[in-house]
Length: 185
Image (tube, one colour):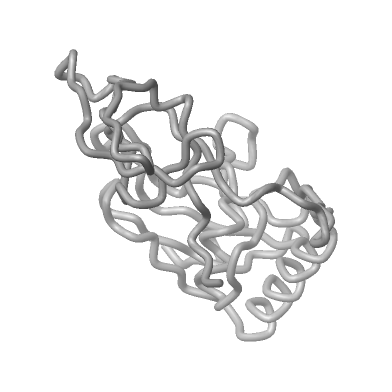
């Protein structure tokens, strides 16, 4: 059967409609990070499919504004979907559409003031998270961590043995310590 005949006779019911992964098609068309959003212009229907482990795979046909645009094949769930475009012009139209989706998506980001003072150190929760034994401070005084005190085998211990500036050694909870940021003076 010719692809044009399949395009004209394909089952376009909701049961045969396949979700369109706009990011995958964007990758095919050399666009990075296309948002996976609900959209109606690009549609996909199964030509033939089967179950592979935990995913449906097979042959799909893509329509852009109800015009056949591409045919794809995915033989297994770990196989990449390979696209075959019907015309260069259609591929370019789909590409422009995907680019417009990138522009329409509002950024959902946190904005902070670069002049905000966040202190000069950070905290950690467990002694297994210590990466540098020489960055610790207790009550704003530099201390040396001598040993992680283990009570469990799960890495959720919080006690450490430290050496104070006057040479005294003592056991403290990791939550009592701050760690200097990785900055140069």
